[in-house]
Image (tube, rainbow, N blue to C red; front, side, top):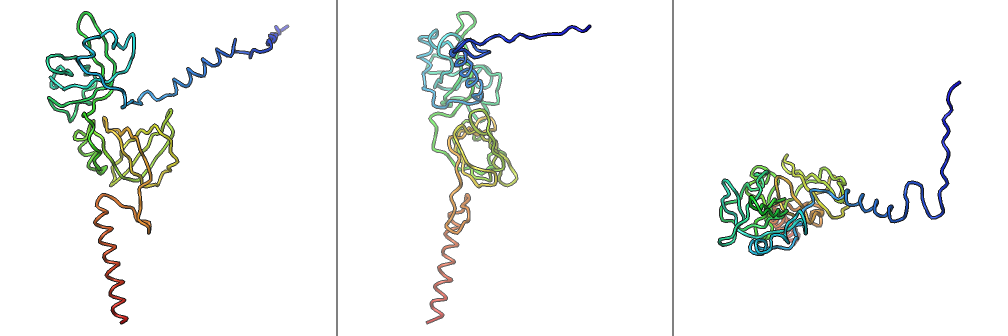
Length: 259
């Protein structure tokens, strides 16, 4: 005879749900899921700035392994060709360079803002592990065509820029969106952490900080158009003025011919 397996249902006490011992456990589980859903690549460019002197004066406080985690340090790039440091005067902090591509387009002596984690070491020297490097202070955004940007990405690395192009793809990614903007056969990858109703096929204007081939956008919106529906691209100011002038001449000539 076969063995019959019987499962006896365990009564669930009032106020408890099976699988959770208390509402607190359920709440903690939800919080963990929310934290894991946050995209790891989201960079907080508004992290308050600390100076090299402040970090060196109290390294244990800024130690990311114990206390406050991600910080931003403002200083000068030195030894950029080998052992990169962020410095101010005679004080310096060694910078981790496992990803040297983030320093492309930067030069010795550039003032920068680094966002990352500082690791304090009593022996062997402390080190700052950067998520990104930004030219500091951030200058007003410059409008760049997607082809120009992708052909020479080093020139715009760590800078705030504006691009205009056709939105070919938009999809949710973690707590934000991943987008693709195309212009002249070139494509730009965009990470946007706001909310949007934009759909593929829309001509958009995106502004953000360009890092390592990807734009971290703080604004993505539909590109403004003329009243009759023509988009205004890079040199469109002159184009629009010329078209309006041409229309004015045509109307004026017809008016004159009727007299």
